[in-house]
Image 1 (cartoon, rainbow, N blue to C red):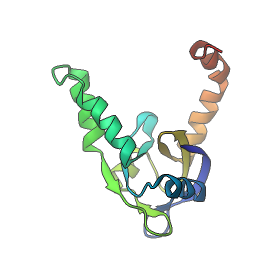
Image 2: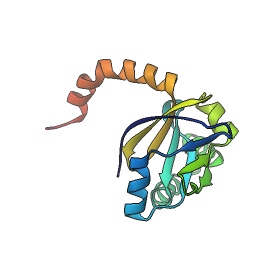
Image 3: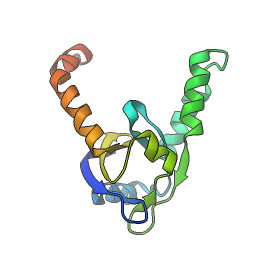
Image 4: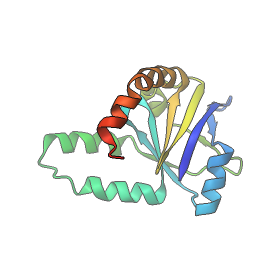
Length: 145
């Protein structure tokens, strides 16, 4: 549903604008509300409300008697906030999520099919450079084409 890589800056009020392509996708699928939370690799995950509910159901089914499940659920859900972008596609990222992702001004928003990831641009460049080196090897190990 969400694809591509886009660079955007936080505005003077700390708002981030959703890329036009993502806004078009939202209109096409009737998405108005999102949930932001701590993602992996120090980015912010951004889920549509429907996708959030789907992920929430999966995580609710994890056994709370397992320490890893409790810890994951705490970090994932305690960090969550719902946002509704304004008519221009702008929304505010809470300070604790910006801190988690080391976001100061320039961000990279990437579409990862069922979610959007919001990265600090420097962190994304470092992650991309490192991951790009092993992309073919990872592909060979993961894909059965």
